[in-house]
Amino acid sequence: MALERDAEGAGLIGSTEADPSEVLQSRTTSSGFLPSMNGGDVETFHQGDEWWNRIGGCPSVQGPYRTLLRAAEDGRNFARDIKTVHVIRGLDDEVVESHNYSDN
Image (cartoon, rainbow, N blue to C red; front, top):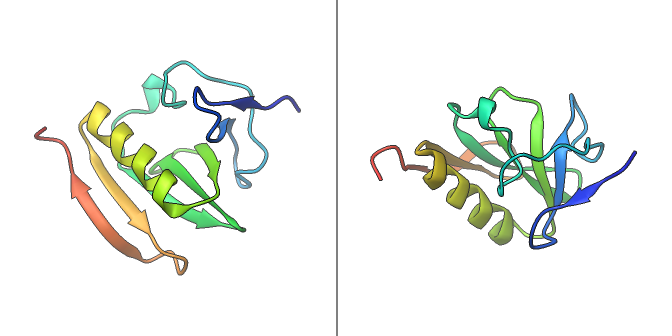
């Protein structure tokens, strides 16, 4: 399966049903998400030994990231771009931080 790096080489772009490490080559925005998926909250989450971003309820992911800091930064920027909520989930999948960018 071919993989594609994002513009800064930070992570792989694509879509997957269950395992974020298996991403499809598919990219239509600079953030790596498909525009038709906009509308859900952006979630930064941990799976395996890596951090990922996704739009809630959608199987497409952005990542992997080695650090939470970098994943959260990209997730926050994407949430600002599409004017939605950015949620950061900890290692236990509980929400540890949430910011609403819908009014920005």
